[in-house]
Image 1 (cartoon, rainbow, N blue to C red):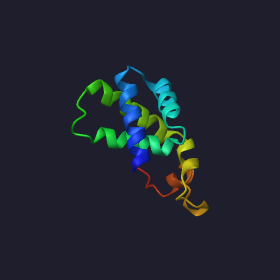
Image 2: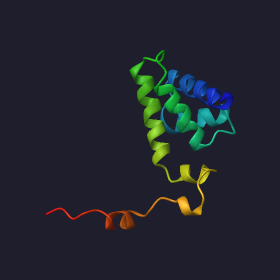
Image 3: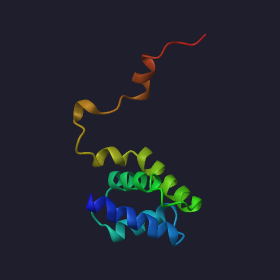
Length: 102
């Protein structure tokens, strides 16, 4: 929890300084070298749920960073929880189970 709090603080500080996208990510990585994409996404969600953080611009920047890194293929590589059997299905395999619309 302490690491997530440090990443959260770095995210908010960087966003308050006007950093966005890759510059914000680099700022967080500089302040928290052990932070990976997964930790940054989780800290971003913590920031988005913080009732004291009300500046829409800061929330938008943090949200955009979280979405970008959540959708990034690299997030799955950081995961310690997922085994080889728990990898996401390919879109083709997932579409085979979908009913055809007429």
